[in-house]
Image (tube, rainbow, N blue to C red):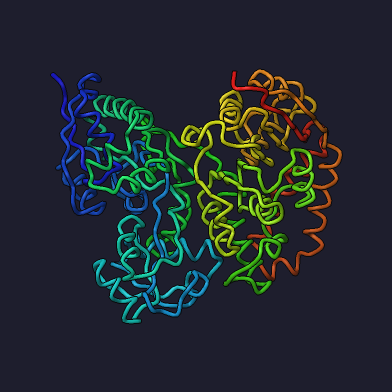
Length: 570
């Protein structure tokens, strides 16, 4: 007899893969029946329904699940689901005096209720902006969405945070103004069940997850999917398309770093008594595993680069208002040798005002703005990490370079298919490919993006000599580099992908010296840097820079500059 699993979820577009699986018989194919139980009251109500045995599985907000489990409930996370973060618009009154997020430090925010997303995300904002969560954040409980909007217009509050698509019509109408945004520093929705259900229905739940994995692949690849979403959920076609291009939905492993970031914010909001929990106890290991993604490494598991930038801009008197791209140069160039390396690139591949460039791994957007500001090039800046992407977008807007620089957030292996083929003259990248082990797929996407005769310019790590096991572990755990080809293999991968090698420069000796000098310079300025950024941020960055310096000093890690040309589309 086919077992029935009752699944609770809100009637929103991100749950469409579940309906695909129901309507196309995918659950039946996996010998399980799913009863969809619509939940209109959100995560709190779904958690209660799951505890009361009214449903067997829920699709709920990450922070709600983490909070409940850490406080001792029998719920367990059984899968990731919406792996992209949820974007929260930061809104103020139509006639208020506030024009930038930095203006809101120490001001009063409106929230809907305690422990709501509008409340918790204030602490995520504080951590990202290097504000003191206990001294620089004030709030007033307003209740519903309308009361939040009224609050910023009657000046009882300075701003509020609310989900971006819900808020957009009120920005468009002019009732309120959007002055920024922030995304959850964790995947926004997870799939959960309870220990009693898992004890009695484990096999059926496994089959449910297999079916959802299949429907998620259909959702990600089927033509006209954004149009289906638009029609089914009554969204504007352009809004549905924008959402679809940026979302990543899959029933898979759970981000360990994402869970820890949720714990950190819940602790700062005083919802949890500690930020030290065994994250393995939040999941059920019979059906779920923790994933160590790029946010796991020490450089990225806190928003250190974003905090460092905001602290630096504040110290330089550039925290708000219009700036020029060259004013940002001391703060937004995190690759080796800064603008010297960019000018070398422009010279090698002839970047001019007529050049269309794709920057893979664009970080805080420094190289993209430099090519646009100095050379007049049009740049598409692709960045995986949402906090870096949003900060880059804000800086580009402040530089008035949005006509020349377009920012897109996501994994190039996923969003590459959504970018126009043969539309670009140059693809550039600095210290990014080392994070991407799927080299053949990456090279194929770069080949697709370039016009015939277009150039790839990248600077990257390679294996100079055989790495020791310890060095491999350090690269994986501290740098998120899980694959490193030799110099010859690197070149072969490019030629096998249809490129002609134009030039390869071994920069190992230069980078060894550069990394050593960077650490020494940082240590020599410790007192000044700690005064600006705090001890923790200083220690985290010094740790990472020292790790990379030591790897180069070991003599097995190499660095190089690779220039290759797409010969044709054949």
